[in-house]
Length: 161
Image 1 (cartoon, helix red, strand yellow):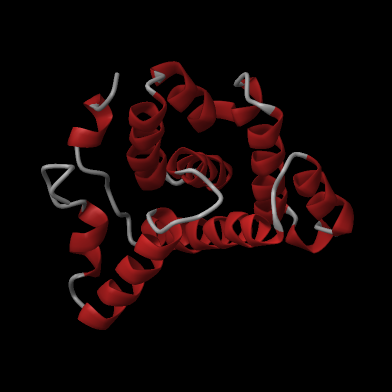
Image 2 (tube, rainbow, N blue to C red):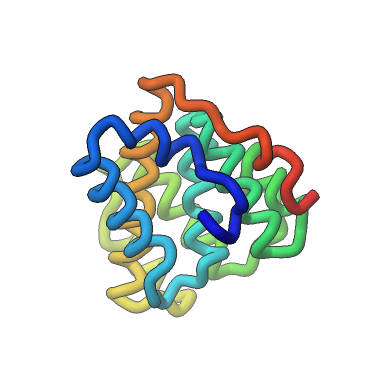
């Protein structure tokens, strides 16, 4: 929160129940900030691609801003919000987002060939776990944000443009 200069509305929304707030913050911090074979940018890219499929206004706004800031590329942030397939991504990033989107849209169709495609571009077994965990977390948080009409802080809209 110190880096942002404001308290994200998602934390305010959870403040009614400290146990839920702590669980959410702990999982977020572990998945998005802890050491991983995935860069912080890659994790934010997953958040945006998943949130785009789910049309989560809060997460598209907040995590789209994070992609713009981490990448230094405001166009990339907008492309991922609208359609990650329009972005000129490295093969690793494209495979990662293809997997995250398939896991979001059609989880019952994910099979060994999908994991093999990730391995083919350099993902380890732990990395594949992390891609799946970030994908699952944002599917959960998107649904909560949508169900509760969570609104992004206005500050996100102008960040890294």
